[in-house]
Length: 406
Image (cartoon, rainbow, N blue to C red; front, side):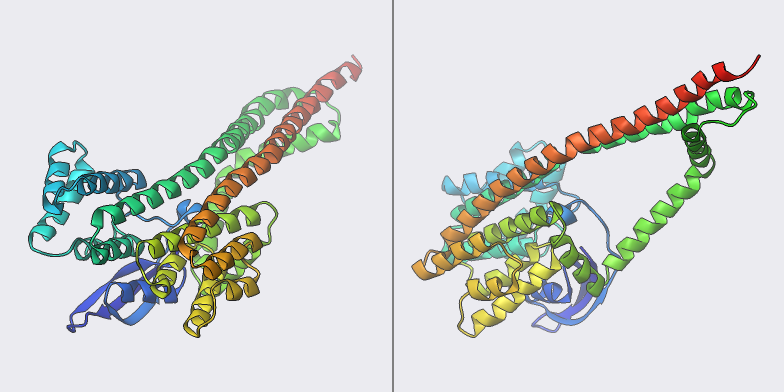
């Protein structure tokens, strides 16, 4: 997601500055307000790329893996649910852990708690590690007086999110390896094997078959201009990334992506599952619905869907329901919105949101498996035909040598 540089002040008038990731400026404003800051200026900064932008918004920091954050949350939850005080629980975690990164994480948290600060305040001071969502869940648990239970809900959320991401990544590993291996084989054939026959064909003294001439020309082009092609590809990717850092271009691309075959359906279901699970977990944890909407919309990678949530938030402030405005956008699946509507009518919105998340977690897995069941054989057959065509063009030229008069 794009990176924004911000300047803000606290309620006491202290100046703060830094950088935050967000789908747009409004999401950065929500994050700053959630931290008790008053935004002064927000400007677009350099934006990086990671596969999380396509599949998930990170809930942890760049230097701390989601797996480690999950372990930290599960351990702290288990200790506190066993009746151990927060300070003592952090002590135990520090003593038993042999992971340097977890030790580095626990130490400043323990120091803050010993100074008498609430856990949510300490975590908010480490924004690169703990997201606005994470801090809000902890804060709601503190208000309810059951921090252990709140952390348990948070660990369930983190675990389900990680499972969804892992399923998507695992499903993509095989086709990615297949494409890489096939590309390497093609490069070896075109840059090493084909040139071995080029001298032989040059001595034939007659015109080569058209297919052989095409293969030899392609081999020469790859050998002579490969580095230029690679530089052009890198430049094009960097320029595309620059374009996506502009809100209007990002909005156009996200809208276009939703209408793409296969990719659009998977992307829509991933964001629906993540938004529903985030919102359901926040509301279940005691966060007011309006505040929860502002936090949950930050977990949506698609800016079109995020703006739809903004419109629904405005309608909710006017006394309307949540499902209706989302239905009007046409960006969210109908089944999900019908389930949300039932949850609103029965007063069980949080449990229905979590059921929506479970349904679309399964749908994402099913959609990916279906897509791969089509894509994998198409890749295998297509690459096989391409390699077979190259080999046949060489064999045709070799066999034509017999036609040369002696």
